[in-house]
Image (cartoon, rainbow, N blue to C red; front, side, top):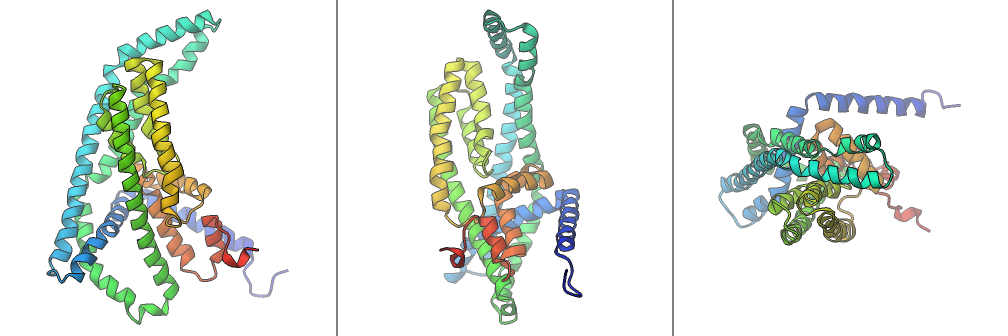
Length: 351
């Protein structure tokens, strides 16, 4: 029995689940607005140390807005240029290698026939290996990102507004009035700090992987090594499956360009570079910055990709950190939930 006047826990769980479904469905419906807003927030957080550095050195007030805004604008223009070039190249590659792919399939069918595998079985097996579909899927991913980043006017206006309000918000959060909710202030500060740390570490390791991938693909004579190196940099921000997404195009091109041996060498190179750096070394440098268990990270990727599309996949970790700050870290009684999300045993619970 429950105490009189107390809401049953099952009802609370159901109401929370229903509220989450409604909220996420609403976010998905207005994703064209929510996406740029969240992207602008992450970009402003990324360049916030520049504004702080200028402020400490007594720079004029207008530079506190102009310099971060310029950095964001240059970054956005670079991303749009890279994505536009990537979409064009993937579209070209999808048609260029059709003949080579047909020849490769003929060889595979002949080899399968010698093993006693019927042509119908092979036809069913190779239907999913159409390079046009694979490059089309990747091109659709890049096009989806391009559709968000190409809204430069909206994103720049949002970044400008956030940069103009940054100092006022900082003063409000540090004021005595805001200190009435210290848990919320600590949660938001932790979110900003952890997001910047995540972006810095992911970018540094992504650049290292990108350069090494370009060198390896150049040595193996895989077409467009710079493009696939840039793709590896982008996919480094996608948790868990980003490595696989970045591997598919160069591995397929290696197969069409140099045969199975080249494809195996490409896969081995990526395993030695990307898997080791991203899965073994990078997490040690991130440490507690993410504060999300492996299962929660994977679920976050699926959830935000469903809600916001390709942009949600790229920003899955920052968005999950924001949700954790608002819903968990701001509540002093939610330490158990924070432990479940991070996968770390609280100090009080350790033997």
